[in-house]
Length: 68
Image 1 (cartoon, rainbow, N blue to C red):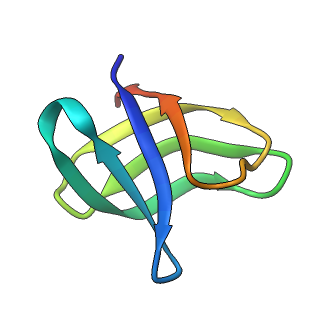
Image 2: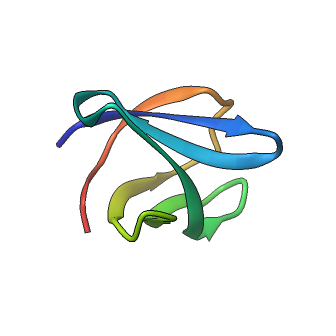
């Protein structure tokens, strides 16, 4: 379960994985409300990750994810 950095770039959500030196834009986020945010995250490179749902965080934020 890698730690990743979630941040907003030009109004779009991006995910940075330090171990892979990869930054990709988020294409879809399963849950996107203020009380229930996270779930399956699909990136523009075709990969998918899972983030345990939480309250919407203030970005940038480091979180733990796992492959979906």
